[in-house]
Image (tube, rainbow, N blue to C red; front, side, top):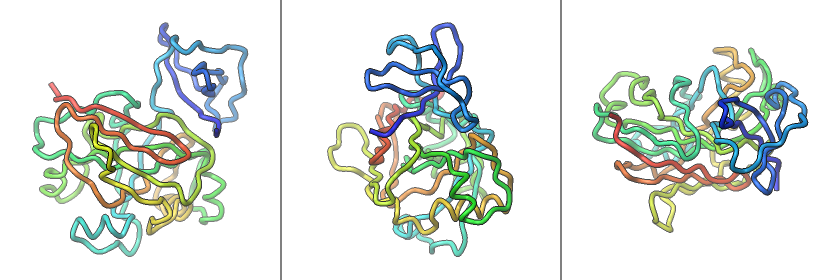
Length: 258
């Protein structure tokens, strides 16, 4: 099994990065791993911490319609170049946290995605250079208020509500291009989304390079690489689970925002 890098909060409120052990204990690091964090002497027992989102990005840069079948189901052609948008850092929540259904929307959709975690400052780089700046990979759900996205002339509101970016549960360093992404809702045994990540139109290294020609990416920033065909609605009380081979599963429930 690949090493799993986590971010946790102890019962005393201290936040640590660490390596998740097979017995669910966490070997604490003295800094984020992409900032060359080293193993400290402390180990957290399995019941002594809360799992957080595995990083705290300064920004989440997302890519729209990066799978041809998803572009088709949205009734649009595949973009000729990556279609970028931003999700605020306040959208990020951990595995197990609640997605809050906003009162302003009547249609909130799941969008399972592979997420890239940036390991170094990235500015105006080539795809080859970008490959070395990618520190690891995790799972994301680009939750979207679809009715608001369609109503507005841009996507900030529909994509930007608090809790609209579940992320986790941990980061792995490498992933197979043939890894399969699947999204499940409640107890359905058949996935609503299922695709290999190498079906992306624009590959991860190209995306990071392209974004870096627009804005500087910082260590710990996150890039969402797009969702495959099969997006659909969530209801209050639903459980949504995104799985990616070689990483694990990201599961969250949906609750009404008060």
